[in-house]
Image (cartoon, rainbow, N blue to C red; front, side, top):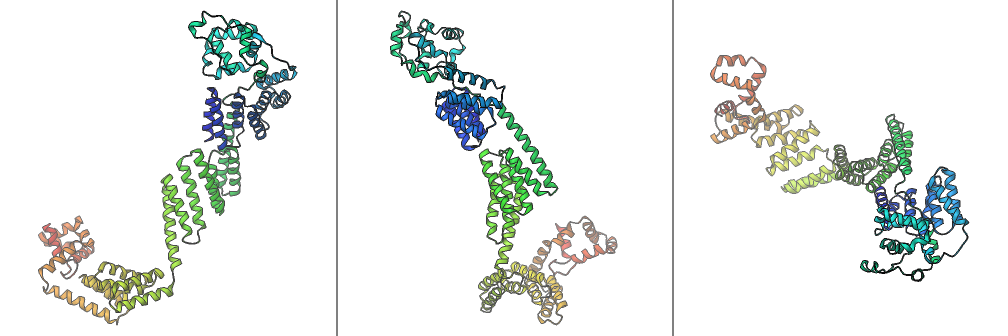
Length: 590
């Protein structure tokens, strides 16, 4: 994140770690190459390292990006002055003062530049005066403050008095060369390591003669360029921070205007406001996601997807809230669903919704994912739909059925249903296969689906009735056969089915079933949901008690049609799935 790298650079600069500061500002520039403040700060760091050519390049870039910013010309002037080009420095400072006449930094820089331009070239003085002149330049304090070995000296009053004395009278430096602190500062200013005796010997020795000291140091003229003024920038420009806050506030106002326009369905105006907000502040991806939502409403799905991709990419850079990333991905998925024309087109939309859920599990996103998966499945069925191929598969199934190869027949019937899921004949045929294989629940489900598709399809009733008969649900089988006869009164299969059911019911009434079979039917009756509801009803519980203990009260209960219907349900003969009136006694025994 650019702000984070910038903050690290400012902290390093304040601590005098200019190389580190320059690296952090470089990292920030890579993330925000259009931020003029970052180039300005790096220019200051490079100038502090005496890399004036690089500092000049950054200062020029600062002015290029923000030509109306006075601080940029301050950086430009300092870099020119560091390179010895006093005339260019004067011109840069004067341009800055045109923009901000009251800027004290620019005024001081201009004064230094004019002095440097007016000074005739000369050789530096020799002897102690030559060395003392090094303490006259403005770089003295910044060098002492930036070096960890000398920084603490600035808090020592006697050292500060010593430096001021040398600045007033450069020749007085010979008086202080015995002080190790002064030697350390001198070493720093000359950029050489000066050997000196140990502390125990220094008290007994005298300072070397000035001529010898001069002989050990480089000629003063070789350092002439280094004593030129250099910039000491503020780690954080308060003007820039204020401007940044103002731009963010303005961007929020544009967003609010965009939201209002969106609610009024004035989409073009909303787009304009969100775009303006982005121009003011590129560190809030909600402007992108909001504009993407508008594009969805306008049917501009490609533009929506582009905005969502930008929002995700920028959000990663800014380490934005996972919810914001999820929102961008969800809106992208919505646009992809709108663009989908084939079942395969839904794959990328489904994948996008899944990614959004990994960022933040939002119910709306989950709903959209389920809808996309359902739409994909429906479209797959439509794409696979082919009645002609379905008929071919049904015929193949019929051939295998005749050969009593029921699993193979089921395979072809299932494929036929995939090709044409609306053909009741195939459900009926597959139900017959399941019946032959003893898979009664699956067969019953197919028979019921068959009748759901075509309630007048007689074969469906015969399939369903036969399955119920095999399951010994004779009453239900009887009802199914009778329902079929309403559509085809002369159908022999249905008539035979009714006759078989009557025989089984009469057989049970005559007591011609075994005790085990009777117990099985009663157990089955107790599992019937309708019977269970009757037996757990408090009113019916009292009615059943009265039937056993108070016959007169029981007769009164039978006058209630609802109670009578429930009693009749319980009183069906043992042949039925309810197990007959014996269910009452089973309840009492429990």
